[in-house]
Length: 597
Image (tube, rainbow, N blue to C red):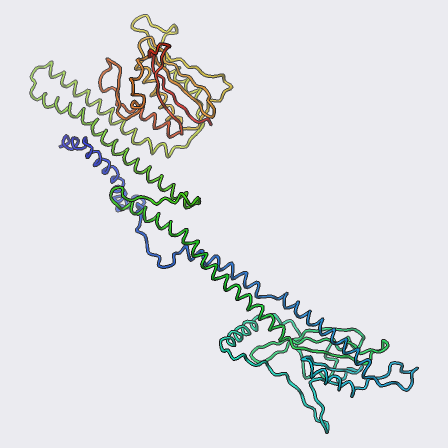
């Protein structure tokens, strides 16, 4: 049964079966370990989930972009400095109006004094001044009030004096709505938000009921002292409404004598309206910016999400599909990180397929190599049962012993070769001194084999010697690598050279620095490499052995393993023949090139 199974694996289809078996074994072990609870569960790829219309990545991009706009918009809508600038501009305008009106009163509402020496400036006719105040009050939206030197209110543009001492208070009506309910709703919402902001809580409260006494207005007191003054007040209204009132007081003077004070006040509703309109314009601009930002964010997300989804779908097809029909999309033309990811995934997938092909070939080669000694053993065992001659029986048992030894060496080399990749990926590279390593090989050969100093022995054929040719000690022959594995490479090369060298031959190990690499050569005096086989000798199970060597002594994996180790160190190994001037082959030369440390 074992024979039949191995026979089936020897065929190409059998190699594929072995590869599939080898690939499935870790999954079975992982599943068993997960069931037993003795190891970490095996992570398996999940099918792609459905994210709906908007993917999480798109939502993240939109959130970040809109959050930045929202923070900028909130800062622009605050507009505290812009409002302060409008207030100051309005106060400057009111101050100019107050000075003009004060000068007009100082010239046009005076009663001449009967004693020019005692009262050179004269006195103000408050009746005439009140008429002037009413005329100004009819033409402007500014409120004018006059105070005498004692701070008593004498005239008010919002108060009409009728017959029999009747006084009528004029109140400014609120502006009419524009008739658009949607616009009015927006204004009401805006006002509610503005009222909720504590922007005017620091202002003093304007007390209209105390206007008759100028002592309640600090700017009036300063004006009666000869200084112009401005003030900003807040008026608490219904539903938390806080309007703003601007006041300016300037003295009424004639020949530097203060005859009274003019107090001009104006509502800050125009400022609030202007600020609101400015904010509305900002909101309109930001509305367009937000729409553009959303569209650009969706476009940006689509340029990221769509190729990633395609790559994920192709990766799932590779993982769950059968055969090699699934091809990862190529986005290398994007020249960005996604293009790099696409190239890396395509290269990784190609490397995985190459590795699977190598596993299949390796499995087929292993099956073929194991089948040969097993077939020989089977024939010997079947013949042993029929042979009665003692001599032939011992010969058959020797064949069986040789085949068992060959199987043992073959399985050991196969095990080492199969573990090589994992060991190379886990081991850490260190600095390896090739000068010391090559010298060590020479010393081991001389001490172990007992070579005579003159290169020969009294009895038997002369042994093969090993020489080392190294550059001066000042040249650095240190390379980064795994010392144990590099030792295995040169040990294989030396062993191969010794086996092919004739008695009395010489194996030369030489090293030199070539640019950014260290080049090591192993030269022998053997028959050289057969024509057209300089590449094939590095294939697995290639066994072109010297004549007379016992069959099955070598598995044919030494040079293949050496090549695998050198390439894992980012190096290169190749072989050539050494010839003389006439083209005669003098031996083989194996060259190893490794990057310098």
